[in-house]
Amino acid sequence: MHRSTVKKSLSTISVIIFCINVTSAHADQISGRELLAACTNSGDLAAKRYCEGYITAAVETHATWALWKQMNRVFCFPEGDKFTHAFGAVLPYLQSHPEELDYEASSLVLTSLNIAYACE
Image (cartoon, rainbow, N blue to C red; front, side, top):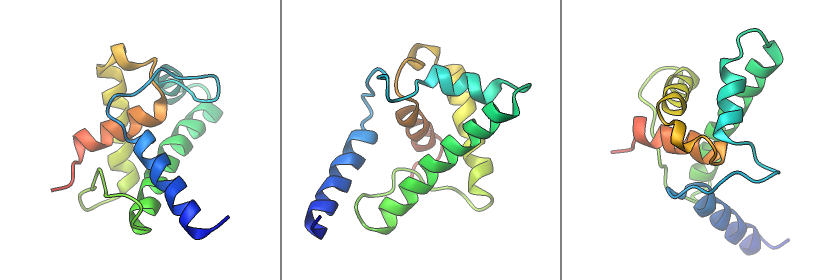
């Protein structure tokens, strides 16, 4: 695949993921409801690890695309551990927006981080 095709593909993907008007989850995506269930299931270590991995992947993918100059940053963490900040923003957002829980989890993670840590 040519470099320009890869850049165009990444640009298209970033636009889709960061749309504020999120869409309902499809079979190949998990919903916010599923992510919230995994994140709040304190008795299931595998579910907790899935939750942490999902949020971590969203944060790292965003950072990579921004580093590659494929997109502008939509959130900027303050000093400190970025994952502590991320987990501290995502779960409260999901819990306080039950009307959005059927949307794709990836969109909700990034929306919650944009609201909590918008870049100046």
